[in-house]
Image 1 (cartoon, helix red, strand yellow):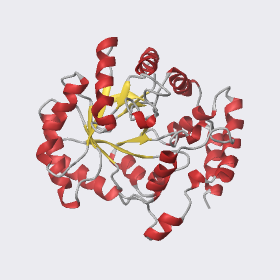
Image 2 (cartoon, helix red, strand yellow):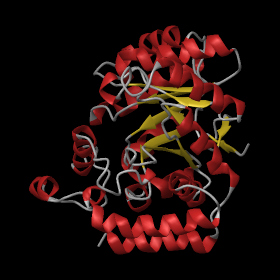
Image 3 (cartoon, rainbow, N blue to C red):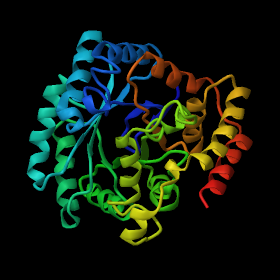
Image 4 (cartoon, rainbow, N blue to C red):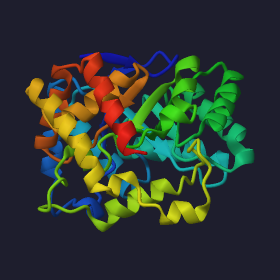
Length: 334
């Protein structure tokens, strides 16, 4: 199993992690289209194939994602690597108590990566980094990460943590073959220059890059469509291009332009056939090929999805195939 480093933290994880945002969340189908046993079957399958890095958060399903992960860990017994996130709510003094509450739900005494889920108020970044550093010093976490930080905020986090002799391990941001702003806004460049892992969330673009929405048989849900429009609002100032709020509200996101995306899917389909692979595997392979600092965390709800994710590591895109995908994405994005 290929390993990738969480920056300079000394922590290594599989090249692919597993996202658990949907675990226990009824609005994403839990209890309807997949069950606890479906999740456990996928969890078990991932561990059998060396994928033992799981990303969760205190806010996912009101803490139930953490509880399920803790339950599965106890039930299975094998070692796993855990990343969870804390949603900054105003007072940095809450960091350690919130971490301890997460540890209780996860049924562990320490996690591998503790992340600040969203950027705090501008004048509190340094105070939050001080508090996150305490999580490592106290032995409750092995490494510190952030999420949804633009390059300027990320650099402030790096500099503040350095005062404690602790490196920033990761920045978890939105990155996939459709949404590539992290490549253009300085975040990926900073990750490379400062040796920080880029954990790519929503690597399948809310399931869009599986190809299952290409035809007319299955439609994007209201929440999926809203998600893409919400991302376009750029609430965390991650986009390198400054646009008015009106243009952000009115413009249709590329993710919702099915005719344009079909050109991308055709190229992905051709590449998949050459490798006896699937379209989702091509999408994940593109991320792995982008940079060794990138660690995608696709979500799993059942064993069929875990099988697809595991198969991603059976092949590697050629340089030419990678360029093909980049080129067609550039063309349809204009």
